[in-house]
Image: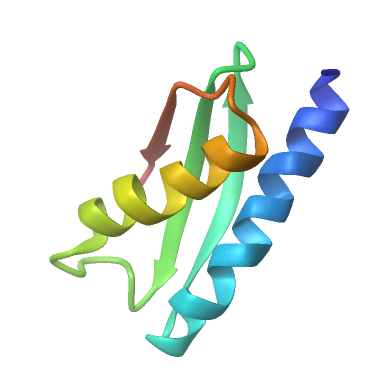
Length: 79
């Protein structure tokens, strides 16, 4: 998978997650993909400071991204 295909797949995963985040007043942005295995995202809006955002990041975002791009090992939220 090329870097472009990987980015496209990660964006597709984020599009799948975005409606759930928006329903709670939040959003998510793709910041970077490093070494084709680490994705950096930025939670936005109501997701910033939410006490369940780490759970959302791991169980929702990371799981969905891995479904589209299995080589991704980790998803990190940057402040």
